[in-house]
Length: 74
Image (tube, rainbow, N blue to C red; front, side, top):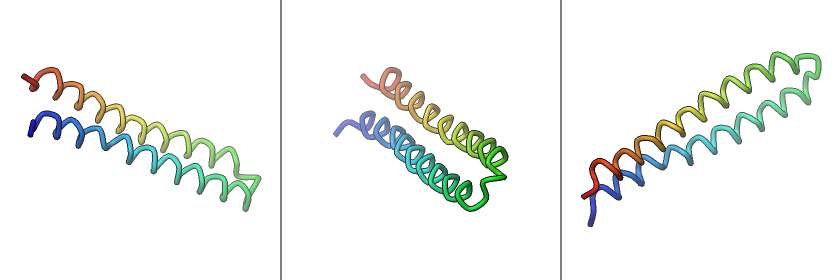
């Protein structure tokens, strides 16, 4: 079994975590706006910041997976 492929697959799992976290954040933000519509501006700013951080984690995982494939693969 090729350990490079396993390492790249494990690094790519960060995309799954990012997708789940962005989905949960969007769900909670929707609930929050439904409960307090006057706070939608604050909720939107916090949602965008959280989604950006989660997406950055997914991008880092993708970059690490690509680096593992190209530089450690033989």
